[in-house]
Length: 61
Image (tube, rainbow, N blue to C red; front, side):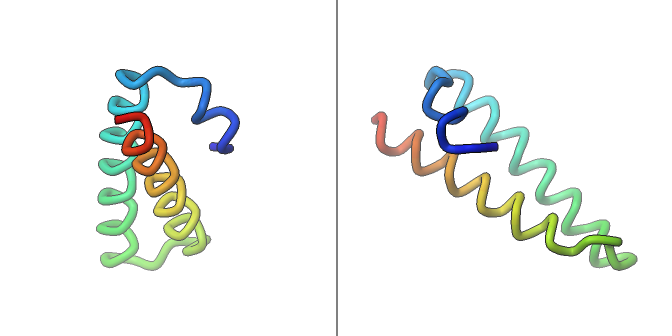
């Protein structure tokens, strides 16, 4: 998700997106611990997206 897409979302949408991204990250991390992912760089990209959304949410408060 790009920064421009994140800026267009409302605060409620950002919170909802953050919750869903955190859940996806946790699930992906657990799956990677059990058996290695085909592309482990997905974890890094998802973690950075979570940080972008969280930062935008903090900036708006």
